[in-house]
Length: 350
Image (cartoon, rainbow, N blue to C red; front, side, top):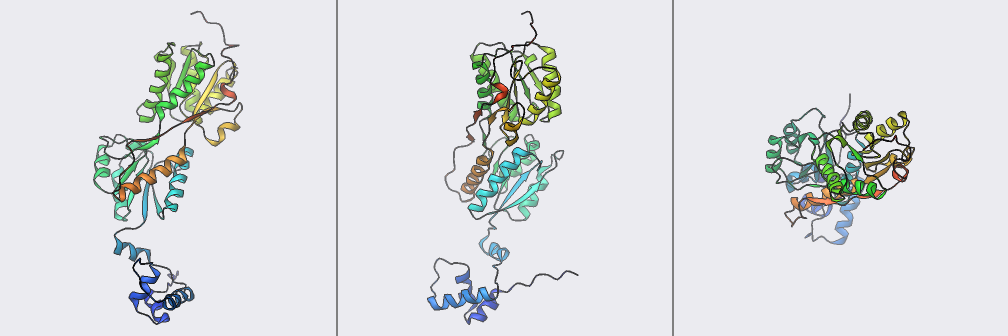
């Protein structure tokens, strides 16, 4: 049978130090207006150390009406990009004196209202919301606007909640502009699911860069996938069947780019000589692929840190940062896009 841990109480510390309960509490809780003789304070602190006194955070939270806890709602906890965001959230929260209460929402579960209510019942001071499946959940959007202070890393219907993320439209532009400077004119793209806001933003940047350069643009150059390597492989196969003139592909995430590289290799197409590839996210493994993968760098940890900063401003009713808060992206150029286009691609009549 497990025996609950025995913690020394504040009253026991006060008795050991021979002071009142109130005086001990003021010293140990660091009350700003505490007026206690130095020798008395020293005696209280010594008694607390002797008894291994641990402050009761729950009792203090009931008194202060705050728990110094931030709720974090995420979906797939194995997602590398999301994990890096979570690291940034954890680090900044710790720096600001807050704990993180993690609530994982299954990918197939669109009922985020239940999870949010559970976090509110645990008296979190605010929430950061990340699950993409909630982008079209109107019930959840209403609740997140009307419950605790919140920040979202995905868009919610109707807005009204601070959004923190990266400039995904610029991500699409950077990738395509780079490929254009390398001489490519038939540039395909492998996207994530079209329903996702991030996909539409990256696709818009792709289209803008092509249109402004007067380069051929067609629906045949766009193929939807599911963020997985297998999906990326299927999508690039479809693209090349539609238009063999393609000499470059912008892939909306690095995991799909793994499948794209594998499929091109299986087809006997060399990267970057036959088909150049640029991914997106710039995950740590990208530079270790063969060939190393060019990728748009997304500052995931910085996004997490900024999300905490914006949330704390909301929680303290201080003037907030501009909404939405989009962090800039950059391009990491590596071997997969550093060659001349189409040196051994089959000749196709225009």
